[in-house]
Length: 252
Length: 202
Ligand code: SF4
Ligand code: FES
Image (tube, each protein chain N blue to C red):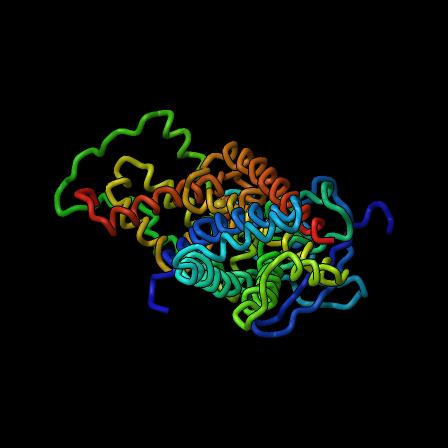
């Protein structure tokens, strides 16, 4: 392969239920190109390596700066964001595949709805609405705010679910991301008021207890979120919550 | 299964693996190590265990029922995982996979082991040094016992590590690393005890 060419092998799928197939593309190298700019190049001129005209590749993207999480896909075997995947740093041929843990819409585009449903299920928000002005909430210590900021970087990208051996079609595990969000919202001084509700949500089927400690998530998260620490901390919180629920406590 | 019971089943599964099953395994390995002190010592120890009062109740509630539950639920857990060590070859992911494999191997081993000893005893055989010497005189069975015992010990040691995470005892990465070293030590020590016992019979 000539130096100034870039070779891509892309796993494609035309409809949600059709069989996937591979298609190869060879592009001219441009300095600084990343996986998304290459996909855009193919979209401009959808011709495969055999010189046949084909359809443009479908994929998702939004921010183009690794903060929205929409563009995740499996690049050379590892799930990651395609907007920050620089061609210069990738081994060739570059293999692109969809994150097949999620339902595939088309080509590299997947449906991450289950993650947003999980966030609803665990109540990953802070209820501040009332029928009257509730006034300012308690303040958060600065040190804690800085710590919580790290957890808040989650962009629901789905990489941790793709990496987890316990998130698959045989299990209904919600995966690491929504669990860590429970820890985030439970740490907030106002969010803490609904702590028990969130803990009970993750003590339901498909929740926290499905974690099998493979710890792939923490190795894979592009935002460096301490997912396994969050999970272990929640294991402790739910142990205490289960104890309170069973033996009774004046605190809810 | 009833809805939203999974959390409690999982916790029970984790707990039973350590108490009583793990404790029983340690005791079993240690007591059998009497074999290294000769036939008489071994038979004496076996006889003492067999003559414990309420033995059948101890066996049923401390050994059989917990192991049965742990095995059945464990198989369910093992088969809901989709191992991916080829894509994610991290240490803990390997432990995750080995935990499931050794669980299945241990179950096969225990089923055979119980059949050959405890059930044989119920049919009138006497469990003693001679019996084990006999079983282990076949190289195939010897290898089967080495693999079975090491798998069981691995499953216990690594399970102890997950137990500490699953109950929220080891939360920080540092405590989890130290727990890894600790459980490696448990694995090495118990393996030594178990395998040296086996060699006492040949
Ligand atoms: S926790 Fe990390 S890997 Fe998982 S969805 Fe959030 S940002 Fe992505
Ligand atoms: S497009 Fe937003 S993370 Fe890549």
